[in-house]
Image (tube, rainbow, N blue to C red):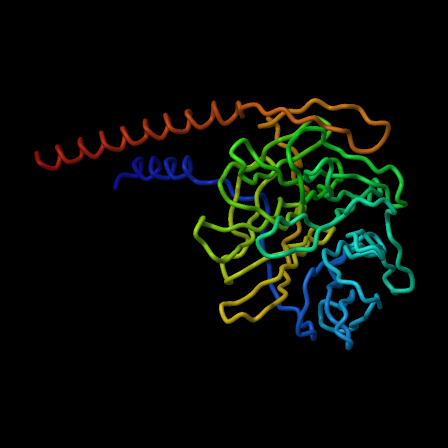
Length: 370
């Protein structure tokens, strides 16, 4: 094959190759030794050295525990009778979901030594939803350390909506004013945006990003999505590879919707990915084909923070100014102009390259016959 032909082939491959999620390189991985037989809702500390999780005490009551990533220093933080789920690691405390005395799901906060436990809000609204198979997953509360605010999902007029509240329990409000259902919000690393799940016009789960400029649609596919988490190198979420697939995998995608790919190729079932705040570690739960549960730790190559917003939103919004904190956003769908321009251009360029290749092949074959 001529050298010029090789360059044309390389150009063609580059045109149709999917962009890779920016700078996410796994340097090493390890399995964390958690001694408890049953555990769930794992979360990693901001510095990546400690894991919090829910398991049973000796009386079979659900409690919050912490343990070092090397398997040492196991510590029980709570001591009550209520079920618990969805841990979120704050700056120097832990938030988790549980039930209050009248049986309503609430956000609770516990100190790292277990000496103090408090309920964040006294309002009667539900502030979480215990995960049940085949049920909609609301996701854990999400912590913004820069603004000291928490996002969570609750009901408003019968539909899931995203709420914001200060860490001291003041300033409760909804943040998106429209008729859509919204759940599983997660702050961006810089605290200026958040990703969440909503449904498009076909009632399909999609990822959206909300910030001061409006709302951006990130995905456009047919798969359900769970367990969102936004780190320095992209947005993690759990989904399936096909509509008939029985196992769920962790995917990573850039905030502008490019570079979607599997985070880890190995493993049967994966879930609950959490990114350490320094961006250097990802923790996730896995189940192998024999049903054994594992907690896996991925150490990442250090890199710079990537852009947290798409330059051209697929969905724009009208913002109703709020007194302080996150703007209240009203969502209005519109088409993605960038995709309308770029995709036809790529198709045309690819077609041109194919014609050139065919022409060269035809010319070569004629010259050989002579």
